[in-house]
Length: 318
Image 1 (cartoon, rainbow, N blue to C red):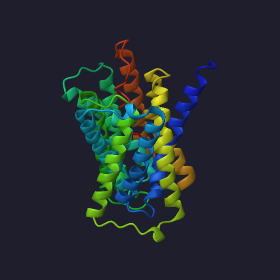
Image 2: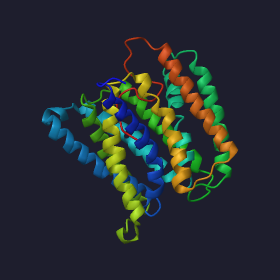
Image 3: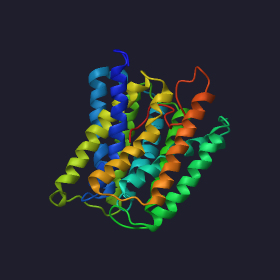
Image 4: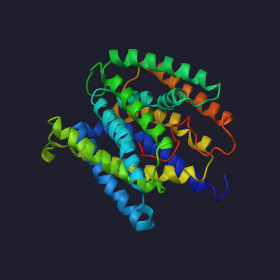
């Protein structure tokens, strides 16, 4: 590791750990906070903070965007941070954080399928990865729907996670087809603010109410961690490393994050995984690895962003 590259590797390690740990943080968030209001509060605070940082370090010029670019950022925010993270937060009231991470790992597979529907060609080797991933998802859904989650055992929990992953994937694909703000941090700030408003409004319409006195210290700490580490530090590290390391290397977060989430869930939260869940999760992680490698070898030399990892353009964080 050269002296000039070590900051990038530190940043990538930060993405590994921080984004992998957010699943466990969400579990503690929903322990005493209403899921939609909790997620809404997370983004309602993180969005303006990021907006202020962009203004501080980039000036007003960094915030310039056309109406079309702003509208695209709003739409992507509704799909990714809103639909993706909102549904994930709801699902984690019923699904263990590690299982949720393993299911979310299918995002690269969803992205590939969406690309195919839109007529984009993909390397032939990706088909094997997609088939492996679908087999792993089938196992996880069968086992996850039958077994209890972190807080409950509702059958719909794992399916809600898949809907969250699908929403995130659609938002990811949309970023390549819509005019996005030139400054990725400014675009992300708009996305987070949009999600904060949308999720808070949805929570209120669903009858959720925030009683600060009933919220435990664990949930407050989890909220703070998700705002600072997940939304600010993690995303900043991700954007930084995209410009410092090969995208195929950055793409490894897609199969490292679920492994970290499972380990943290077992060690800290005492989550348990049976042989079926471990086998299904292993298939999903293996599928993502196959897809990332196939996309890397099949991509053109001038291609800067990996579609396999769901990182077509810098967008919202986990």
